[in-house]
Amino acid sequence: MDFDFIIVGAGSAGCVLANRLSADGRYQVALFEAGGKDSYPWIHIPVGYFKTMGNPATDWCYRTEPDPGLNGRAINWPRGKVLGGSSSINGLLYVRGQPQDFDQWRQLGNVGWSWDDVMPLFRRAENWEGAPSAVRGTGGPLNVSEGRLTRPVIDAWVDAAEGLGYKRNDDYNGEDQEGVGHFQMTMRNGRRCSSATAFLKPARGRSNLHIFTGAKTLGLIMEGRRAAGIRVRQGDRVIEARARCEVVLSAGSLGSPHIMMLSGIGAASELAAHGIEVVQDLAGVGKNLQDHLQARPVYKTTQSTINSETRHPLQYVGIALEYALKRSGPMAMAASLGTAFLKTRPELETPDIQFHLQPFSADKPGEGTHSFSAFTASVLQLRPESTGHLQLTSSSPDDYVAIHPNYLATKTDCDTMVAGVRIARAVCAADPVRSMITEEYAPGPAVDDGDDDAILEWVRNTATTIYHPTGTCKMGTDKMAVVDPRLRVHGIEGLRVADASIMPVITSGNTNAPAIMIGEKASEMILEDAL
Image (cartoon, rainbow, N blue to C red; front, side):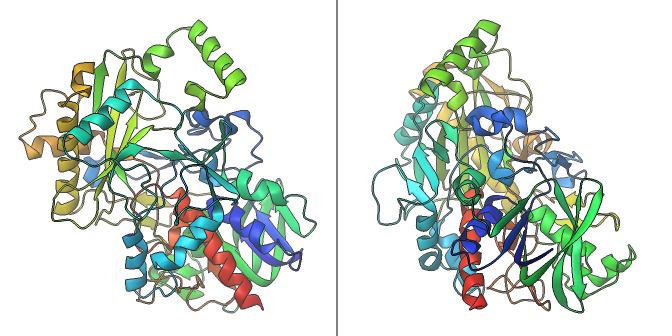
């Protein structure tokens, strides 16, 4: 099979690429997705992340290696394995990041990636339903809505934070991220608006776009230092697909570097250890891994929450009816309702922590909720200094890479998480939310607020990912960079990477929105270079 462009991975960026590259009909475009079609009903119901994460039909079900920063704990790392990728199983939260994030990318030598460069791409992608703004877009494929659902205890937390002096911000995706408010969501009429829904569905009827599902890429077809195509397993057959112009890896921060390493592109010594012939010695492949780690303070409350509303079968019937009739209620809920982007130290230029306020609680995300009514004030560090890496475990594409997140490896990271927990506690001790709380369930009274070591130990023992792996094929010009500012793999012809793995530094917030922007940017550059 021959095509002009081959895209590997139908995730947040890959679906954008498929749409944009096939738009004018000039090029034959193939999109290969290892997962299945997005026909599972729970994908499209906002609260369906409870059914899709951890489900092998829709989730790769990765798991990290035991991590020293988590006191030797290994944790689950869900990643989408379906059309739409992780945008089909995530919490629907739409966060661009801070303008300073992209200006930093530019300062690192990545021409064309400053805030002024990428802001128009965010605007082009989105259909913002909120108040008009010079930096917000309308008419784009991706629907972004304001939160329609409210919960008294979440609203009270936001009010309490404002009462402590943190400013209210009704649009953290504008020019200034700082403040407290409510999340924006990739949702349309009470249904998930994944990248597949937004970008792939409108393009599916194009005769020049060929979509393959259940098609796992085993490796690149290399002709010298040129990527000529891919080898794909679909069912019980292995096929070759060749690209007349380019192959674009959009398989995510775990998938894209894995495919490259299997194909002989990576650190030479690591490839040789598994008997893989070295095509290009690129030390940075699989390195520079960054993620957001969340600590999850939990508070018992007198208010009704998802915990108390899902105890009995009749309650489920009522919830289902409300969603069926009104596209509202708990089934229309994103993973979090309230948010805050705050500074742990006044001298900081921009916020360094983010809150996810959730009207439910559980001992572990994805498990059943607690038997008591409670809410969670999850807090994470926006720009961790710690970086981890991926490690090849064999030369087989069926063996997962070993994931070493290396959380909490610097003093700044530890101090920031401790400060974030303290801020969560301070807000919960302030009116009006204080009067709604009956008990701090976690960390709990045994963890003294004045004891840094005790708070940090609680974080190490309980914190988990919030599902934002990035950086493993980082963009740049230094010796550890994998792609150049036009996303071309250093030393290889005909191969680009376009997904969150190219981030030189993780963005300040949830990563779906910037991954979609990366898809827009890559499409623009690929079409420019094809002329």
